[in-house]
Amino acid sequence: MTDRVEAFAGPDRFVVVPASYVFLLREGSDGTEVLLQRRGAVPYMPGHWAAAAAGHVERGETAYDAAAREALEEIGVTGLSLEFATAMQRTRSGEAIDERIDFFFTARSWTGEPRIVEPLKATELGWFALDDLPDPMVPHEAAVLAGLRDGTLPAYSTFGFAAS
Image (cartoon, rainbow, N blue to C red):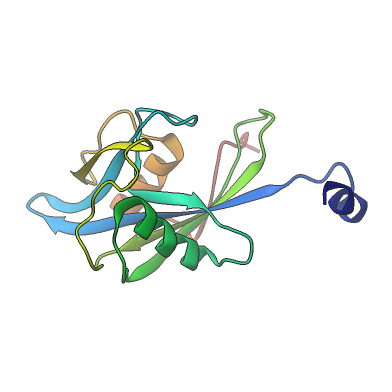
């Protein structure tokens, strides 16, 4: 398969890895709250707070379908009323990693009580006010939440690229 891709795209083409994220939102006594998970012993940013549900979009799956699947697999909820928030093109400032395209969704209604379904990947769930997020946060997710909080989140955003 790699040879076929390189023959078509050329050896200098990069691969973009798609992922979907779900931020469950609710109104709390101090304004809008978001459900976050503390990442467990995983390779990327262990111990950081992150979206309660997120993961790669599988071949032949839409970003919306991936968001719904991840919500079921990671926090046990279904019937989400997903709203598209932003698409973020992301890299790590010249590091040798694949570039990413992250699709962020919010949901204000769902079926079931959110719970940790994969205890090796997530150690804790918590509701946090958008203006009082926990530390440490996964940086690109914190940027999206800041845009949601401030009402400044564009439909397309970038993270990790050098300023031009």
